Image: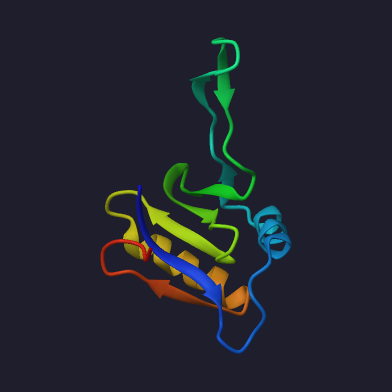
Length: 115
C-alpha cells in the first residue's frame, strides 16, 4: 500500500475528532478491519497475533482490498489515505466522499507524506 493523501478539517472548522471518524467507520459498509499479523511477545517470547488499532480500516470493493484509511498521529487530527497498486483514483474518490461528509479537505501528496 502506498500513502497518497490525508483528510484534514477545513481551515475554518474545528479539527477532526477521532470519535467522528470511529462513527463514520461504523456506518460504512465498504470498510473492514485490518487483519492481525503474527508476532512475538517481547516479554515471554511466545507467539501472538498483533492487531492494528480499530481506527485503521481496509477499503473493500467487489471483495478485494483496494486501499485503506488510518487515523493519523495524535497531534495531527487527520486520516491518512493509502491505496493498492493501480487503485489510486478509486481510493481518492472514496476519500473525497469521506472528506465531504466530515466537512474536511482531501490533501493529496505528490510523492511522500509531509514530515
